[in-house]
Image (tube, rainbow, N blue to C red; front, side):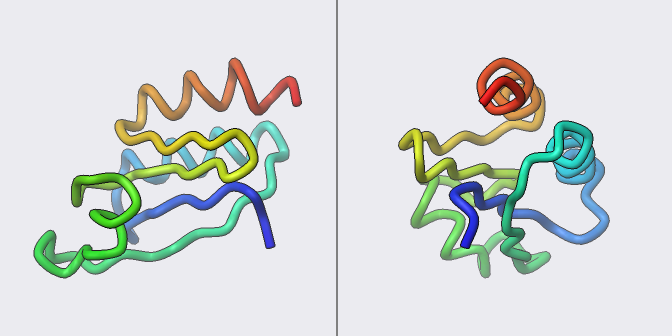
Length: 82
């Protein structure tokens, strides 16, 4: 089981950007696919306090983060060097 979990929606360009960044840096992660309807995204809300995706959870560092730009920056600054 990976320490990184990405909550993602199929076809979401912001989610795809995060996936590409993780892949480009060779970072192992697990994808949790979420429902298209915001009202059905209860697990995302439970872990992040909101229903939007993408959301990344880094169990090892105790980080939960939303917003693709923030996630990409986090991956490049923190995870890519790990």
